[in-house]
Length: 358
Image (cartoon, rainbow, N blue to C red; front, side, top):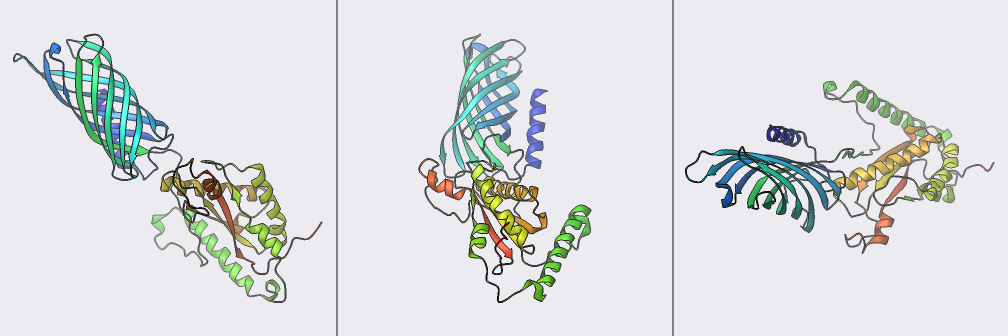
């Protein structure tokens, strides 16, 4: 019964999985596998073919806690009838070595419980395995397991071969792209919600009104000089700590300095681009950059800037300010510089006026 439940959960996760950043903290692994086991001679059993399922969660990027259930039918010695077997395992699994972006070597240790209708034993086990990533969401996994039964004193060997599927709750790999042209209304109204259709139409109308306003003499003064100080203030970047979207006091001070320029340049529009440093999966970094841009916009909107005046996008680990080795410790200063939000003027440059003094 337990085996069927775990297998059903694993297959459901495989069907619904979206590309995510595997082996990040909080990522959940669902596995389904076939098994072949050989038993200690003292049990009067030869070998077992069966199937099982696995659920695990990454505590750290290289360490996960796993729970497995498997079962099958084992042949017996002396011509006796085959017997049903099952086992349950809890273990910690570590990734001591990664080869490229797809291959991981595994080592694990845990406790297990094995039983049939004529014996039951608790024990402990060790695991050596390899995992080959087929995508950011799915991997092939092969494990060799050596188990010692404490109650009976025997040793069993097993081979597990199957698929592992990864899901990372709370990470949306959504990229927002900016365009200077109006966003057309969708032609297939049944492909998006009414709310999304209304939002896209509102954006298109705002851009149309903005382009029309730029053609009026009141907004364009060729003789006016742009304020270099105001432009520099608007383009000043803010930095984030590793894996964080929280604004530091220094970042809030930089954003507060932009507020008077927003107020005295009512036609100004900006683009906020979120970035991440190199460590981590590229998909995770794209999502992290987007969340940083969203946090920056939320702060400005919360202090009175109209949401339509701020667009956001993400570059993830693209367009690094400072390039360096991927290792987090060796490249600490470069990673600090790359975890940032950048600001770019969409409208009003080069006619940006300095804010009025109170």
